[in-house]
Image 1 (cartoon, rainbow, N blue to C red):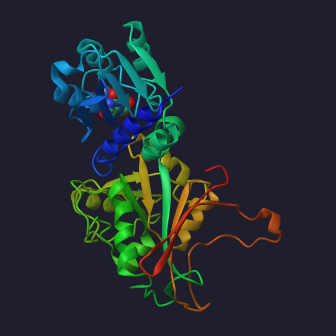
Image 2 (image 1 turned 45 degrees about the horizontal axis):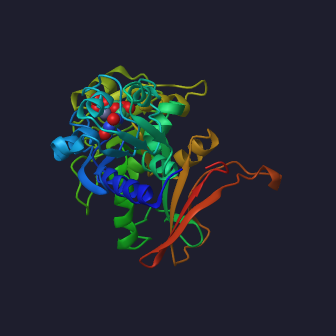
Image 3 (image 1 turned 30 degrees about the horizontal axis):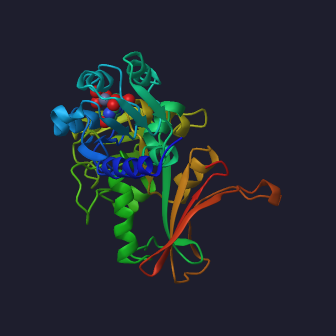
Length: 363
Ligand code: AOF
Ligand code: ZN
């Protein structure tokens, strides 16, 4: 159904889309390549929500050469008036002859209507070229649109014997500088970086992207059941940081609001933060990908609530011994059949360390 040249141009469109890895959210990363008589006549990608979509940039680059062209799109063109007008209309008006898309837009406002609009205008449309790659690039956007929750990635840095810190809290540094830099790439692509109050009190992290260039910072999110976060915590920068709590302490909520944070009260029946409700709320706030950088308590809680989609585990070639902190707190099993099965998605060396990406059995 698709030719080798189709693959080549769609791969180019995917590389263009990837340029938006650190900037397009909450919108998806999208690329577009316009080809006429075998020649690329225009390319475009979506850089930032509110600005022109990929197709509009490519059509502008092609000018009149877009007439009769074949358009390669990593996502079905939009059919709705969002922050910008519909791309499907723009493709029709430009006189594009044929469109090949990698995947349908999972946004219920579009969901097939973009391609239907093209077909109604007499444009030939094919869908599904390099679909897996396109979906992977927008794993968080797809998750938010189809499941109503973000893609949740738990990052862990540990010794080869699975320890993340000494019992006195000392954890700087177990993994190498190369692994820590690699970790910042996960932060940069995430809409939010989440931690627990234990980590805030012990390490006072900034949770910002450093070492690599990015035009925007992920939103810090703290799970803080008792609202114990200090008002001068390093991650509070007056940018609407999210603090999820189970404690309705009015005075503290007001004080946090005064320093620019946003407190969200979501208690469960046991007096903890309702983690599933928190993820739904994050999706409502247009958070696509969440990177969790927390201690064993929050990591374990998220796993038990079946809210972790992916683990990114850096293992350093050192041993720390058993009187040290674990990656995750999970209840003891009496039957091995109850173990949580994962699938290894990817393994690679990063400097002297090993990086393992693991997902749930269906991932
Ligand atoms: C496209 N091309 O490059 C992107 C699309 O608020 P807006 O106008 O920016 O619309 C955002 C929605 O448009 C987003 O949720 C998704 O459904 C679609 N994204 N569509 O045709 C693009 N980024
Ligand atoms: Zn569009």
